[in-house]
Amino acid sequence: MAELNTGEGKKGGGKVRSKKSNPGVDLTAMVDLAFLLITFFMLTTTLSKPQSMPLAMPDKAKDDTPTTKIPEERMMTILIGKDNKILWYMGKFETPIIPPTEAVYGKNGIRKDLLKQIEYGKAIAKRDGFKDGEGLIVNIKASDKANYRNLVDILDEMAITHPQLYAIGDITPGEIDLLTKTGLY
Amino acid sequence: MAKVKISKKSTRIDMTAMCDVAFLLLSFFIMTATAKQPEPKPVDAPASTVLEKLPEEGVATITVGDKEVFFTIPGADVRKKTLERISAQYKVAFTEDEYKTFSTMEGFGVPLNQLKGLLKLNAEERNKEGVQKGIPYDSINNELTNWVKFAREAEKEVLDEKIANGEKDVVYKDLDIAIKGDAKEDYTTIKRIIDILQEQKKNRFFLVTGLRDKNF
Image 1 (cartoon, rainbow over the protein chains, first blue to last red):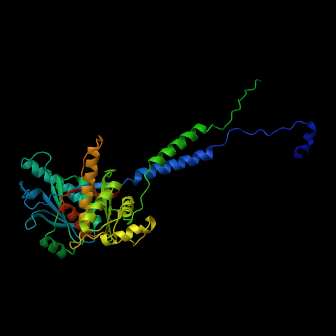
Image 2: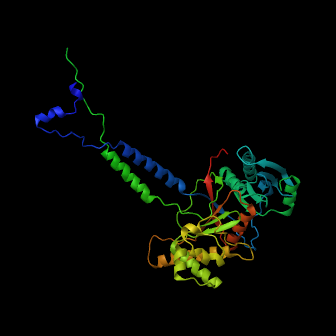
Image 3: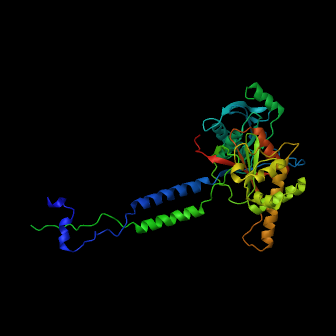
């Protein structure tokens, strides 16, 4: 059939027809690639800025005697032991209002206790006629068996639950004994 | 019957403009992106829910992993001035070339007696695992204290110079310190670093963390 001819038959016509090519190039693939790269750069640039947690430690000057007495009833102490376990108590170490209780990290562990104690602390502060911002004061004491993740986890709990004040303190020998007795040291 | 003529339109869209915009955005992102610096000690920072970002400038980072400590000083001129002070303190002379190499080096972690050897290596060799063994920070040989102290002094000098030169957008601030610790690092090591900072009345600093959801 004539269709199969590849154009030899036209030779006789004399006029050479150049193939009509489309002047526009297909840019679809190029655009695809460009947007892929844009997405990549957008994601990597925003994610690479490191997150941080600001931490203010109390001044270590030797002569500073606390001018305001810390009310025992609103004082919570968190001891960080080994194997991602926590021991917490309210009040003084010798005469705790709530005896040492073991807890784990996370929203079903220490956070529940913290939120409860924060409410309690607020109520106590109100009863004693303090201003509105006053409430629970948390003292964080990490033992030598704790790791850095434990510390950041507890500080993170503070950032989530917002007690009135929190500080990192040094653990006492008595508290280490307590941790040893409960098998957390 | 009248035939409804459907006008034959090309299904192709002109993509030129789209392509232009895409590449414009692409070049913008490439230019603004900061290249990730190779770290001598890659650590796995613990996660937290705090969304605060580290300040972009003027943050020195203390990286702690496997009980080894690395120090990153921001800014080439601050690094040079820090080394000048270290050189005076420990009576070690450095050549002009060594100053130059040190000012291009972001983070490092070697005792001072190995610093000259480290400066001889090229950038690739420096960041190989096991080449840098950490800055001593125990009470006998506490080089980290001096590095931090001198970096803060150097930062102050650089900022003072800028202010004296009448640069209006420069505000004086103390060198910020960030601690980037490995999640598995012992608390005692971190405590020691915090104590070193507190000894020089640096009571506010940052802990570098990753990101996580509140429902952990």
